[in-house]
Image (tube, rainbow, N blue to C red; front, side, top):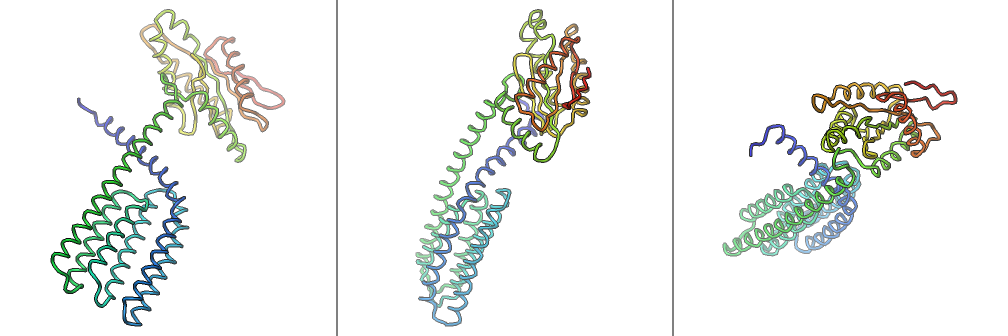
Length: 376
């Protein structure tokens, strides 16, 4: 099977979009819990400080360790607020990675101040550090890179600066740390893949339930959600909003003469033509068998009519075969300060039927003012 460049590009964009949506979900959960991880890290930092003060002999070295660990705890507290304000998981992951890298450098710096550290005890500390890295939310590649780099740095440091380490103990510690990295990575990657699969399945079901299977337009329920959201937004910002009722004039005749398959083709092509003229913020919904509703936020009535003129012109040029042509009738209303969603639907529906009564293939609208000005 040969896949075109366009199809491959579309598939890549779809995967990227899905990954970003999944990471946005992860970001919310991570930001809610990051203060807990920071508190645990601060407590662990304090416990390590007690151990350091017990085993480090020099007064100057003790002071350096105390100040350094204290500053790191302050950094953790300040970083929590920053992490809770970031807008992307990529940014969140980058900041977490920097903090964890700083923690590893702190661990090695303090270890350098020990006169005769116990290598196996420090190896257990490295294993705990690896486990902690895999617990804190982050991107998988960042976690794997940081854990491997940290382990390499620890064993390199131990080889050159910790004296009298038996070769067997050195290699045994390496095996333990590698096993900790492998086991943690397998578990984390498995959990990540399962969570992403569940998210994609849930998202697919939500998209399926929110869209019409034939025309890819949204459903009535989704239209109502979007209408309330945009109506409230436009009122707060003093912006216009228009609602359009669209009816395919001769769909019944097409179904009777050429079959419902031809009627389905007509609906799909009309929906695609309208969608091509709309912005990302606009909404097209399938209302019934041959009816659509358009929601146009931040669009005046005048601009809505100009848009529908282009749509009407494009539909008039649509030819399903050599003989079948289609047209649509439109009814347009603009939101008033006191308008409700149901009122706008009812008014647009009435105007659409007036278009059909006046000859079909027309746009009927009126300004929502005390003195209505109607045009066809």
